[in-house]
Length: 408
Ligand code: NIG
Ligand code: FE
Image (cartoon, rainbow, N blue to C red; front, side, top):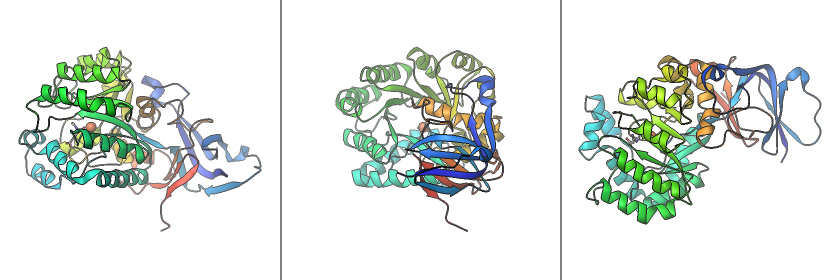
Protein backbone atom coordinates (compact mmCIF):
# COMPACT_ATOMS: atom_id res chain seq x y z
CA UNK A 1 0.00 0.00 0.00
CA UNK A 2 1.53 3.37 -1.00
CA UNK A 3 1.99 6.15 1.52
CA UNK A 4 -0.53 8.98 1.35
CA UNK A 5 0.77 12.54 1.72
CA UNK A 6 -1.92 15.15 2.31
CA UNK A 7 -0.01 18.36 1.60
CA UNK A 8 -0.39 22.13 1.67
CA UNK A 9 -3.32 22.09 4.10
CA UNK A 10 -4.35 25.51 5.42
CA UNK A 11 -4.59 24.02 8.93
CA UNK A 12 -4.40 20.71 10.78
CA UNK A 13 -6.21 20.63 14.12
CA UNK A 14 -6.36 17.92 16.77
CA UNK A 15 -7.75 17.72 20.32
CA UNK A 16 -5.02 18.33 22.89
CA UNK A 17 -2.60 15.83 24.42
CA UNK A 18 -2.90 12.06 24.57
CA UNK A 19 -5.35 11.66 27.48
CA UNK A 20 -9.00 10.63 27.21
CA UNK A 21 -11.61 11.58 27.93
CA UNK A 22 -10.87 15.30 27.87
CA UNK A 23 -12.67 17.32 30.54
CA UNK A 24 -12.95 20.92 31.69
CA UNK A 25 -10.34 23.34 30.32
CA UNK A 26 -8.55 20.56 28.39
CA UNK A 27 -11.60 20.27 26.11
CA UNK A 28 -10.87 23.75 24.78
CA UNK A 29 -7.22 23.13 23.92
CA UNK A 30 -7.09 22.26 20.25
CA UNK A 31 -3.57 21.86 18.83
CA UNK A 32 -3.25 23.78 15.58
CA UNK A 33 -0.62 23.64 12.83
CA UNK A 34 -0.84 26.19 10.00
CA UNK A 35 0.26 25.34 6.42
CA UNK A 36 0.63 21.72 7.27
CA UNK A 37 0.91 18.17 5.96
CA UNK A 38 -0.18 14.75 7.20
CA UNK A 39 1.69 11.62 6.11
CA UNK A 40 -0.17 8.30 6.29
CA UNK A 41 1.54 4.93 6.12
CA UNK A 42 0.11 1.44 6.60
CA UNK A 43 -3.21 2.92 7.69
CA UNK A 44 -1.66 5.00 10.46
CA UNK A 45 -0.50 8.58 10.81
CA UNK A 46 3.26 8.43 10.28
CA UNK A 47 3.97 12.15 10.62
CA UNK A 48 2.20 15.48 10.90
CA UNK A 49 3.80 18.91 10.79
CA UNK A 50 4.40 22.19 9.04
CA UNK A 51 5.07 22.08 5.28
CA UNK A 52 8.34 23.90 5.96
CA UNK A 53 9.54 20.85 7.92
CA UNK A 54 8.51 18.25 5.33
CA UNK A 55 11.51 16.09 4.35
CA UNK A 56 11.83 14.38 0.94
CA UNK A 57 10.02 11.02 0.99
CA UNK A 58 11.17 7.78 -0.57
CA UNK A 59 9.13 4.89 -1.88
CA UNK A 60 5.68 4.88 -3.37
CA UNK A 61 3.80 8.05 -2.35
CA UNK A 62 0.34 9.20 -3.43
CA UNK A 63 -0.22 12.93 -2.93
CA UNK A 64 -3.51 14.64 -2.07
CA UNK A 65 -3.63 18.40 -2.64
CA UNK A 66 -4.93 20.03 0.54
CA UNK A 67 -4.80 23.64 -0.66
CA UNK A 68 -7.74 25.59 0.72
CA UNK A 69 -8.68 22.77 3.10
CA UNK A 70 -8.33 22.10 6.82
CA UNK A 71 -7.83 18.60 8.25
CA UNK A 72 -9.67 17.53 11.39
CA UNK A 73 -9.65 13.99 12.79
CA UNK A 74 -12.16 11.74 11.03
CA UNK A 75 -15.42 12.32 12.93
CA UNK A 76 -16.60 9.61 15.33
CA UNK A 77 -20.37 9.16 15.72
CA UNK A 78 -20.80 7.22 18.96
CA UNK A 79 -24.63 7.03 18.93
CA UNK A 80 -26.67 6.10 15.84
CA UNK A 81 -29.63 3.86 14.99
CA UNK A 82 -28.94 3.02 11.31
CA UNK A 83 -30.62 -0.42 11.18
CA UNK A 84 -34.19 0.39 10.21
CA UNK A 85 -36.62 -0.07 7.36
CA UNK A 86 -39.07 2.51 6.03
CA UNK A 87 -39.29 6.06 7.29
CA UNK A 88 -41.45 8.20 9.58
CA UNK A 89 -42.21 11.12 7.30
CA UNK A 90 -45.96 10.78 7.99
CA UNK A 91 -45.35 11.01 11.73
CA UNK A 92 -42.96 13.93 11.16
CA UNK A 93 -45.73 15.76 9.31
CA UNK A 94 -48.19 15.06 12.16
CA UNK A 95 -45.67 16.34 14.67
CA UNK A 96 -45.18 19.46 12.58
CA UNK A 97 -48.93 20.00 13.08
CA UNK A 98 -48.68 19.69 16.87
CA UNK A 99 -48.81 15.95 17.80
CA UNK A 100 -46.22 15.00 20.41
CA UNK A 101 -43.59 12.28 20.04
CA UNK A 102 -44.64 10.60 23.28
CA UNK A 103 -48.34 10.58 22.26
CA UNK A 104 -47.53 8.96 18.91
CA UNK A 105 -45.37 6.39 20.69
CA UNK A 106 -48.14 5.56 23.19
CA UNK A 107 -50.63 5.14 20.31
CA UNK A 108 -48.51 2.36 18.74
CA UNK A 109 -46.76 4.65 16.25
CA UNK A 110 -43.26 5.93 16.85
CA UNK A 111 -40.64 3.25 17.48
CA UNK A 112 -43.16 0.42 16.96
CA UNK A 113 -44.06 1.63 13.47
CA UNK A 114 -40.37 1.40 12.53
CA UNK A 115 -40.28 -2.06 14.12
CA UNK A 116 -42.99 -3.22 11.68
CA UNK A 117 -41.10 -1.78 8.68
CA UNK A 118 -37.77 -3.20 9.87
CA UNK A 119 -39.13 -6.70 10.36
CA UNK A 120 -40.59 -6.70 6.87
CA UNK A 121 -37.34 -5.45 5.27
CA UNK A 122 -35.63 -8.84 5.78
CA UNK A 123 -31.92 -9.34 6.42
CA UNK A 124 -30.85 -8.31 2.91
CA UNK A 125 -33.02 -5.18 2.94
CA UNK A 126 -31.67 -4.25 6.33
CA UNK A 127 -28.06 -4.72 5.20
CA UNK A 128 -28.76 -2.47 2.21
CA UNK A 129 -30.34 0.19 4.44
CA UNK A 130 -27.38 0.26 6.83
CA UNK A 131 -24.95 0.45 3.90
CA UNK A 132 -26.88 3.41 2.48
CA UNK A 133 -26.93 5.19 5.84
CA UNK A 134 -23.21 4.53 6.28
CA UNK A 135 -22.61 6.25 2.93
CA UNK A 136 -24.54 9.32 4.12
CA UNK A 137 -22.43 9.44 7.29
CA UNK A 138 -19.17 9.08 5.37
CA UNK A 139 -20.07 11.96 3.06
CA UNK A 140 -20.78 14.06 6.17
CA UNK A 141 -17.24 13.35 7.42
CA UNK A 142 -17.86 10.42 9.77
CA UNK A 143 -15.13 7.76 9.59
CA UNK A 144 -16.26 5.65 12.56
CA UNK A 145 -19.83 4.98 13.62
CA UNK A 146 -21.51 3.04 16.35
CA UNK A 147 -24.80 1.49 15.21
CA UNK A 148 -27.56 0.15 17.43
CA UNK A 149 -30.11 -2.55 16.81
CA UNK A 150 -33.47 -1.96 18.49
CA UNK A 151 -35.99 -1.89 15.63
CA UNK A 152 -36.26 -5.67 15.32
CA UNK A 153 -37.16 -6.65 18.88
CA UNK A 154 -37.39 -10.26 17.76
CA UNK A 155 -34.50 -12.70 17.69
CA UNK A 156 -33.94 -12.84 13.96
CA UNK A 157 -34.21 -9.13 13.21
CA UNK A 158 -32.11 -8.03 16.20
CA UNK A 159 -29.31 -10.38 15.14
CA UNK A 160 -29.65 -9.31 11.48
CA UNK A 161 -29.38 -5.66 12.60
CA UNK A 162 -26.14 -6.30 14.51
CA UNK A 163 -24.68 -8.21 11.57
CA UNK A 164 -25.67 -5.45 9.14
CA UNK A 165 -23.92 -2.81 11.27
CA UNK A 166 -20.78 -4.93 11.50
CA UNK A 167 -20.77 -5.71 7.76
CA UNK A 168 -21.04 -1.99 6.97
CA UNK A 169 -17.94 -1.36 9.13
CA UNK A 170 -19.80 -0.03 12.16
CA UNK A 171 -19.44 -0.85 15.85
CA UNK A 172 -22.60 -2.73 16.89
CA UNK A 173 -24.55 -2.05 20.09
CA UNK A 174 -27.41 -4.31 21.10
CA UNK A 175 -30.39 -2.10 21.98
CA UNK A 176 -32.63 -5.06 22.75
CA UNK A 177 -34.46 -3.04 25.42
CA UNK A 178 -35.73 -0.22 23.18
CA UNK A 179 -39.49 -0.87 23.38
CA UNK A 180 -41.81 -3.78 24.16
CA UNK A 181 -43.23 -5.26 20.94
CA UNK A 182 -46.95 -6.17 20.83
CA UNK A 183 -46.48 -9.98 20.95
CA UNK A 184 -45.32 -9.71 24.61
CA UNK A 185 -47.69 -8.88 27.49
CA UNK A 186 -45.43 -6.38 29.20
CA UNK A 187 -41.84 -5.18 29.54
CA UNK A 188 -40.92 -7.86 32.10
CA UNK A 189 -42.19 -10.68 29.87
CA UNK A 190 -40.30 -9.19 26.92
CA UNK A 191 -37.09 -9.01 29.01
CA UNK A 192 -37.56 -12.69 29.99
CA UNK A 193 -37.63 -13.48 26.28
CA UNK A 194 -34.66 -11.41 25.09
CA UNK A 195 -32.38 -12.31 27.97
CA UNK A 196 -32.95 -16.02 27.37
CA UNK A 197 -33.43 -16.22 23.61
CA UNK A 198 -31.47 -13.30 22.14
CA UNK A 199 -28.65 -12.23 24.49
CA UNK A 200 -26.51 -15.38 24.07
CA UNK A 201 -26.34 -14.79 20.31
CA UNK A 202 -26.32 -10.99 20.40
CA UNK A 203 -23.38 -10.79 22.81
CA UNK A 204 -20.73 -12.17 20.42
CA UNK A 205 -21.97 -9.83 17.65
CA UNK A 206 -22.09 -6.62 19.72
CA UNK A 207 -19.58 -4.60 21.76
CA UNK A 208 -22.11 -2.88 24.03
CA UNK A 209 -25.67 -3.08 25.27
CA UNK A 210 -28.08 -0.16 25.52
CA UNK A 211 -31.50 0.37 27.14
CA UNK A 212 -34.16 3.09 26.80
CA UNK A 213 -34.75 3.98 30.45
CA UNK A 214 -37.82 6.21 30.29
CA UNK A 215 -41.46 6.55 31.24
CA UNK A 216 -43.36 4.29 28.83
CA UNK A 217 -40.25 2.24 27.92
CA UNK A 218 -38.19 0.50 30.67
CA UNK A 219 -37.93 1.57 34.32
CA UNK A 220 -34.75 1.57 36.42
CA UNK A 221 -35.40 -1.89 37.87
CA UNK A 222 -35.91 -3.38 34.42
CA UNK A 223 -32.93 -1.49 32.99
CA UNK A 224 -30.71 -2.82 35.79
CA UNK A 225 -31.82 -6.37 35.13
CA UNK A 226 -31.11 -6.05 31.40
CA UNK A 227 -27.75 -4.32 31.83
CA UNK A 228 -26.48 -6.68 34.53
CA UNK A 229 -27.27 -9.68 32.34
CA UNK A 230 -25.53 -8.04 29.37
CA UNK A 231 -22.50 -7.21 31.49
CA UNK A 232 -22.21 -10.87 32.47
CA UNK A 233 -21.93 -11.64 28.76
CA UNK A 234 -19.01 -9.20 28.45
CA UNK A 235 -20.82 -6.25 26.90
CA UNK A 236 -19.99 -2.62 27.74
CA UNK A 237 -23.02 -0.67 28.96
CA UNK A 238 -24.84 2.40 27.61
CA UNK A 239 -28.13 4.00 28.69
CA UNK A 240 -30.61 6.23 26.85
CA UNK A 241 -31.54 8.33 29.86
CA UNK A 242 -33.11 11.61 31.02
CA UNK A 243 -34.63 12.21 27.56
CA UNK A 244 -38.09 13.23 28.83
CA UNK A 245 -37.89 12.52 32.58
CA UNK A 246 -35.23 11.94 35.22
CA UNK A 247 -36.01 8.30 35.96
CA UNK A 248 -32.78 7.15 37.59
CA UNK A 249 -30.53 6.76 34.54
CA UNK A 250 -27.54 8.68 35.89
CA UNK A 251 -27.32 6.89 39.28
CA UNK A 252 -27.71 3.53 37.53
CA UNK A 253 -25.07 4.38 34.91
CA UNK A 254 -22.63 5.40 37.65
CA UNK A 255 -23.33 2.36 39.78
CA UNK A 256 -22.90 -0.06 36.87
CA UNK A 257 -19.87 1.86 35.51
CA UNK A 258 -21.57 2.31 32.16
CA UNK A 259 -19.58 3.83 29.32
CA UNK A 260 -22.17 6.55 28.82
CA UNK A 261 -25.58 7.96 29.51
CA UNK A 262 -27.05 9.55 26.41
CA UNK A 263 -29.64 12.34 25.81
CA UNK A 264 -29.80 14.22 29.19
CA UNK A 265 -32.33 16.80 27.95
CA UNK A 266 -34.21 16.47 31.27
CA UNK A 267 -31.14 16.38 33.55
CA UNK A 268 -31.22 18.79 36.51
CA UNK A 269 -28.42 20.19 38.71
CA UNK A 270 -28.06 17.06 40.87
CA UNK A 271 -27.64 14.89 37.79
CA UNK A 272 -25.07 17.31 36.38
CA UNK A 273 -23.05 17.19 39.61
CA UNK A 274 -23.25 13.41 39.89
CA UNK A 275 -22.22 12.82 36.28
CA UNK A 276 -19.35 15.31 36.53
CA UNK A 277 -17.94 13.47 39.54
CA UNK A 278 -18.11 10.11 37.76
CA UNK A 279 -16.29 8.20 35.03
CA UNK A 280 -19.41 8.02 32.86
CA UNK A 281 -19.45 10.12 29.69
CA UNK A 282 -22.54 12.22 28.96
CA UNK A 283 -23.45 11.90 25.28
CA UNK A 284 -25.24 15.01 24.02
CA UNK A 285 -27.62 14.68 21.06
CA UNK A 286 -28.72 18.22 20.15
CA UNK A 287 -30.10 17.19 16.74
CA UNK A 288 -32.62 15.01 18.58
CA UNK A 289 -33.66 17.85 20.92
CA UNK A 290 -34.00 20.16 17.90
CA UNK A 291 -35.95 17.62 15.81
CA UNK A 292 -38.42 16.99 18.65
CA UNK A 293 -38.61 20.61 19.79
CA UNK A 294 -37.35 19.60 23.24
CA UNK A 295 -35.10 21.50 25.65
CA UNK A 296 -31.38 21.23 24.95
CA UNK A 297 -29.24 19.23 27.43
CA UNK A 298 -27.31 21.25 30.05
CA UNK A 299 -24.05 20.97 28.14
CA UNK A 300 -22.37 24.13 29.44
CA UNK A 301 -23.11 23.18 33.04
CA UNK A 302 -21.78 19.65 32.45
CA UNK A 303 -18.52 20.87 30.91
CA UNK A 304 -18.02 23.58 33.53
CA UNK A 305 -18.61 21.04 36.31
CA UNK A 306 -15.89 18.81 34.81
CA UNK A 307 -18.00 16.11 33.15
CA UNK A 308 -16.69 14.12 30.19
CA UNK A 309 -19.03 14.86 27.29
CA UNK A 310 -19.34 13.55 23.76
CA UNK A 311 -21.52 14.72 20.87
CA UNK A 312 -23.37 12.40 18.49
CA UNK A 313 -26.13 12.58 15.88
CA UNK A 314 -28.59 9.95 17.28
CA UNK A 315 -29.32 9.29 13.58
CA UNK A 316 -32.70 7.47 13.46
CA UNK A 317 -35.99 7.80 11.56
CA UNK A 318 -38.08 9.17 14.46
CA UNK A 319 -36.28 11.60 16.73
CA UNK A 320 -33.26 12.68 14.67
CA UNK A 321 -33.23 12.03 10.93
CA UNK A 322 -29.80 13.62 10.69
CA UNK A 323 -26.45 11.98 9.90
CA UNK A 324 -24.34 15.16 9.99
CA UNK A 325 -21.85 15.67 12.82
CA UNK A 326 -20.83 19.06 11.34
CA UNK A 327 -24.47 20.15 11.78
CA UNK A 328 -24.36 18.78 15.33
CA UNK A 329 -21.23 20.89 15.95
CA UNK A 330 -23.13 23.96 14.74
CA UNK A 331 -25.93 23.12 17.18
CA UNK A 332 -23.33 22.62 19.91
CA UNK A 333 -21.97 26.12 19.32
CA UNK A 334 -25.31 27.88 18.87
CA UNK A 335 -27.58 25.96 21.27
CA UNK A 336 -25.30 24.24 23.79
CA UNK A 337 -22.82 27.13 24.15
CA UNK A 338 -19.82 24.92 23.50
CA UNK A 339 -16.82 26.42 21.71
CA UNK A 340 -15.77 24.94 18.36
CA UNK A 341 -12.79 23.30 20.12
CA UNK A 342 -15.05 21.72 22.76
CA UNK A 343 -17.38 20.48 20.03
CA UNK A 344 -14.47 19.04 18.05
CA UNK A 345 -13.10 17.08 21.03
CA UNK A 346 -16.61 15.87 21.85
CA UNK A 347 -17.18 14.24 18.44
CA UNK A 348 -13.65 12.93 17.97
CA UNK A 349 -11.53 11.71 20.87
CA UNK A 350 -14.25 11.76 23.55
CA UNK A 351 -16.63 9.90 21.25
CA UNK A 352 -13.83 7.40 20.57
CA UNK A 353 -13.50 7.01 24.35
CA UNK A 354 -17.19 6.03 24.57
CA UNK A 355 -16.41 3.35 21.98
CA UNK A 356 -13.28 2.17 23.83
CA UNK A 357 -10.95 3.40 21.07
CA UNK A 358 -9.47 6.70 22.28
CA UNK A 359 -5.97 5.23 22.10
CA UNK A 360 -6.21 5.06 18.32
CA UNK A 361 -9.10 7.18 17.01
CA UNK A 362 -10.04 10.85 17.20
CA UNK A 363 -6.68 12.64 17.01
CA UNK A 364 -4.23 13.60 14.30
CA UNK A 365 -1.06 12.41 16.00
CA UNK A 366 1.59 9.87 15.09
CA UNK A 367 0.46 6.29 15.60
CA UNK A 368 -3.28 6.98 15.49
CA UNK A 369 -5.44 5.61 12.66
CA UNK A 370 -5.05 7.70 9.51
CA UNK A 371 -8.67 8.88 9.53
CA UNK A 372 -9.02 12.49 8.37
CA UNK A 373 -11.90 14.73 7.36
CA UNK A 374 -10.92 17.57 5.03
CA UNK A 375 -13.04 20.69 5.36
CA UNK A 376 -13.42 23.10 2.48
CA UNK A 377 -12.66 26.14 4.62
CA UNK A 378 -9.75 28.46 5.46
CA UNK A 379 -10.21 27.93 9.22
CA UNK A 380 -11.19 24.62 10.89
CA UNK A 381 -13.78 26.38 13.07
CA UNK A 382 -16.03 26.54 10.00
CA UNK A 383 -16.88 23.01 11.19
CA UNK A 384 -19.31 24.70 13.60
CA UNK A 385 -19.69 28.04 11.83
CA UNK A 386 -20.93 26.85 8.41
CA UNK A 387 -24.45 25.87 9.45
CA UNK A 388 -25.66 23.03 7.21
CA UNK A 389 -22.92 23.93 4.71
CA UNK A 390 -21.37 21.87 1.93
CA UNK A 391 -18.21 21.65 3.98
CA UNK A 392 -16.71 18.18 3.64
CA UNK A 393 -14.32 18.02 0.68
CA UNK A 394 -12.79 14.58 1.26
CA UNK A 395 -12.59 11.78 3.78
CA UNK A 396 -9.52 9.60 4.42
CA UNK A 397 -10.08 6.31 6.24
CA UNK A 398 -7.18 4.06 7.26
CA UNK A 399 -4.81 6.00 5.03
CA UNK A 400 -6.80 5.87 1.80
CA UNK A 401 -9.27 8.31 0.28
CA UNK A 402 -12.67 6.82 1.12
CA UNK A 403 -14.67 9.64 -0.45
CA UNK A 404 -14.02 12.94 -2.16
CA UNK A 405 -16.49 15.51 -3.35
CA UNK A 406 -16.99 15.55 -7.11
CA UNK A 407 -15.25 18.52 -8.79
CA UNK A 408 -17.54 21.54 -9.20
O1 NIG B 1 -32.48 7.91 20.81
N1 NIG B 1 -35.32 7.51 22.58
C1 NIG B 1 -35.19 6.39 22.14
N2 NIG B 1 -34.68 6.01 20.97
C2 NIG B 1 -34.33 6.86 19.87
C3 NIG B 1 -35.48 7.25 19.02
C4 NIG B 1 -36.18 6.12 18.42
C5 NIG B 1 -37.27 6.47 17.45
O2 NIG B 1 -38.04 7.43 17.64
O3 NIG B 1 -37.37 5.72 16.48
C6 NIG B 1 -33.59 8.09 20.37
O4 NIG B 1 -34.09 9.21 20.32
FE1 FE C 1 -30.72 7.14 20.45
